[in-house]
Image 1 (cartoon, rainbow, N blue to C red):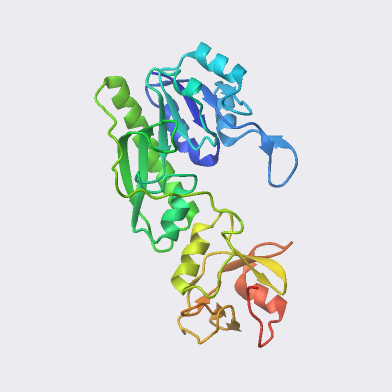
Image 2 (tube, rainbow, N blue to C red):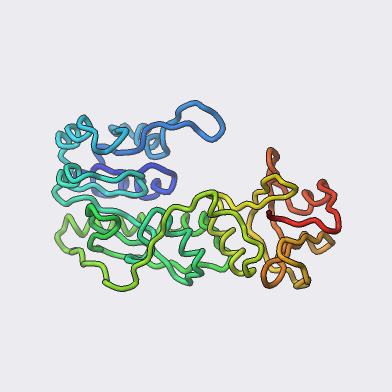
Length: 309
């Protein structure tokens, strides 16, 4: 099939590369406009745009997918199907109607669970033991379309959202290619999503990523892992923001109040609403990422020091 691939971040690259290696023909990619990198103000192409350019594929970068010039060009290309992986924009009805076989989205959850922008983060936050990826036909309602296929993936006890998403991106790429093959062959039909089990996964903001040390240790652990690498879990120390990497259980189970700090040969412990945890890596405001032990030595912790507001 002639395809227009829609995607933007690094997460979409395993799927784009798998499709480029498949029997299908990617004639153009749709991606978000060039944006400043985190380290400079210089505009840079998205990871998907860079791979497409290197492969000699036309790149479409509309400010909005309802822009008339984009819709005209999409109609001129006339793709048979349009696979989508983390594009980052809502597709209007005029765009949805162009491909003969519609737009097929790879979503990183077992639909109808975790519809929305942050399914992997919410799966970890909720303590799910199992998640996965789904391919489905895009409709105007968010993540509601009929499902072509799924692949499952266990959530490991130490998984960050980055770890889990990396695995799902690879497994999902294989699922997406198989879905496109089945659509072309006429051997695969989409089935409506189940009416029960619906849950929502809105984008996590920086405000959502602030650690509440009065919460149980299991909740603190899940929040930090869910927010790693983005948006990045954090707390405050002496009035400044302190970014946090994943924590682990304190083997001493020290009797510390919520947010109370203790530094010794076992590490840097901090109290929660249940049992203490040990900090891993931290990043003080304006400084580099460092082991919590190094941070504690430089901070010269006092006996009554604590994290949080």
